[in-house]
Length: 108
Length: 430
Image (tube, rainbow over all chains, first blue to last red):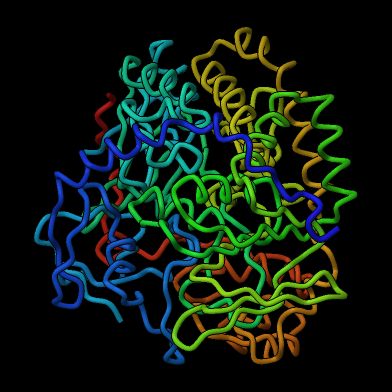
């Protein structure tokens, strides 16, 4: 029963072309922007959301009232775990905002 | 002076887009609001007209966003509704700015969020919702080579796992807490009633390829030093440990009822009660999509169209769509039954497990309380920044507590936003 739904590897034809995706990634990577997370530079593709940039930097987003590191839980602006300070404005939901060139993000 | 519209639609997912486009096409002055940087909601998150065709539901996205653009509807993205300071008024905030909007009619389409249930280790970075990980990947997170455990409940798990696998993640397994019998029965009914849905489900399964789908299994705990490193799953008899970089775990969806409840819309069994024209118990407010019961894209689009026609005063057009709705609603009822939460999930949190993440309130402290109100007074559970959006559903499941009433502001807001004077005189009807 454990693996009753183990799936066969024969159907990959249903997938959209992987090639098209690679092309698009190349396009995106051509329009990269730089921001800083805790004063360290992070390069992201244009259109990347701030929570993702924080995760890419290796840092978590906020410190809980008991001192635990927290990172995004819901990814859609509900849980408030992704709050960071952006350009001096605290308590911003990073998952709901896009990176902008020169943005300074501070976590914790 | 404030902006005023015949119709304001809150939430630019499929239901909101359909309502706004239909009403604007019929000549109404419409404003569509969303807190996200772009329209689309969760199911169409990250879609652009250039790339949408390769995603599931991409053709619907292209069709509806084209209609929306051509309709003349104003679309305000990045705006969060925080309060309803007077009859026919919404107060919004965007970054450091705030403003009021006036409306004659309102359509609420604020969608759903994932239900989270506490288990040891669920607060570790790297543990997130299934939909959450999907959203972050669409927001630019690179999943290539990452080991992901997908767990929780509901058809979303398959969609998320398929998307992750396709984007290059290594999906270590999909653990569905519902039993194989329930999942299979749901599949059978779905095949008869909604062949499209089951083909969609099969497509997901096929795309996850060698990854096993395991009904009757659930996460017991997550462990790691500074982030999740290992997850234990069980079927009640055996237990398995899996190493992973991310645990994507959500237990189905629940409607975002804060705004409709603030505005006085009556809810029944966790959803807004509406009539055949999507009208809520409040005369100028309609609700569509997940707010009226979790049912996905088809239901949201049909309900949105109905509400759009109704808002435009064309009830006869709306009633043509009602028969299509019956089938999708039946589907959502069956889904709810099939993915009902198993009682073993009640035993997952230990006394030390945090239930309210905003205020770090543990299960042990909450077990001693008799109601959400008592928990608020004694422990601050539900009084943090999320205002009980996450722990409220968990506490309802774990302790049987009813959610307390909703009070403004429904999202954390700046003092200047709350203190702004209410302008009831001059309005600019757009």
